[in-house]
Length: 294
Image (cartoon, rainbow, N blue to C red; front, side):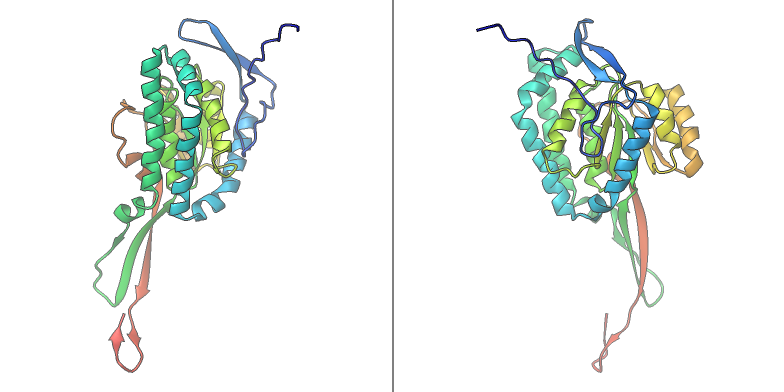
């Protein structure tokens, strides 16, 4: 029996629930922390970024309209599927971040737990962000939050998996759809996450993952008129300032970069960052001849 040839994995983008190559046909070499070649990753173009925004916009209606309970089930399913492929992610995170196997396993465990954390918040975040407001008149006045829409995310550069999950999960937990630019030097865990999302009941277009040069794609996303918000977690201060100016053109919500400990309790900040508040006025009245009011 002849010796088998090694089958190298071909990493692809994740856009609209599918796995396209970059329309440009470009790839770039990804190496481990010691400079050893790991794989070729797709190098996305500006058109890939625009295509991802189209897919994300198309998914907004269905995802934001899903019940919070349903979104929680889907996020929990992602955690389940990650458990089944844990060994692969431990290996990829260890290579990407130069960690020992034990430390990489702890990172992957924390990332899985983070999906469960946000799954539990989907039907609770509305309770702490909404309110019934006192008004001096015959009205009910109720404030409720709703998703912002399409959120562009520049993933953290140094935390290739836990940081990535920590910026994607809160945005989609609250009903947004995302276009995420993976860590430029360590995109493999992100591209593999796309394969998990595709088999976790996440509707196509809710999460779209691009790899390549952040400096090439970010300005397109920041100035795109169909992107409602941008998370600049993976940008340095100078680059973030340029992107913030570009984002001002259509009044995007901007979450500025700041030092982050991705292992810490995530809190609710990243969920509330991409919520809008809607206030409804409703007149009170009387019910029938009894005169009871509502």
